[in-house]
Amino acid sequence: MMGAVTASAQTVAPEGINYNYLEGNLALYPSYGAGPGSQDYVGVRVRGAALVAPEVFLFGQLRYLTDDIDFTQAHFGAAYRYKILEDTDLYAGPAIEYMDLDLPGQFGGGSIDEVGFSVRGGIRHRLNEDFEFAGEIRHVFFGGDIDDNWIGITGTVQYFLTQELGLIGEVDIEDGELGLLGGLRYNF
Figure 1 (spheres, rainbow, N blue to C red):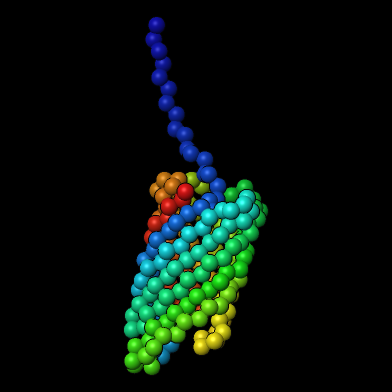
Figure 2: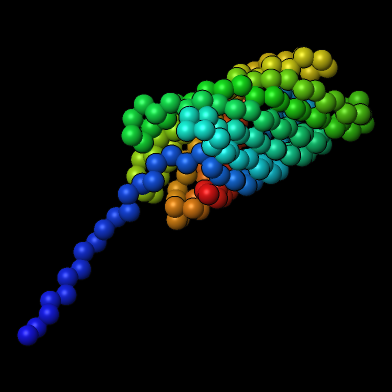
């Protein structure tokens, strides 16, 4: 009696959109700002999210960029997600924003730090087991010494090395300034 061996290729079904992650990135914002004070910022960003209810997640970010001026930015907020298709979510929510600029002597010296708020919304789409795409728009408001508000737009792609670990590429346009970010995301 002979036994038959069969083999079949199976693909892993996408696990959907994950709102539990921690991410680390390298960042480059070339020619940030106009005129003689223009900065070629390089630095790091850490961000993450955690689902606290089926439709609600917390999110946060810490970003440190440096050139002649050191620029630290952080935000923390909550958002509501709404599934519009099996693998596509819309989300929106508010955040508290923090910004600190450390100015060297040629820019007047000292430090400017302020707390503000933002409103953001976006879309996330899990294309297949390998790729997820996301887009976000945010409106940031600061008073005090900064006294400014701006719109930011971000486009992100995640390539899944495994279901837990992904490569991240991102284009960020903040107040008209281009930023390029890349790094790793751990999905838990």
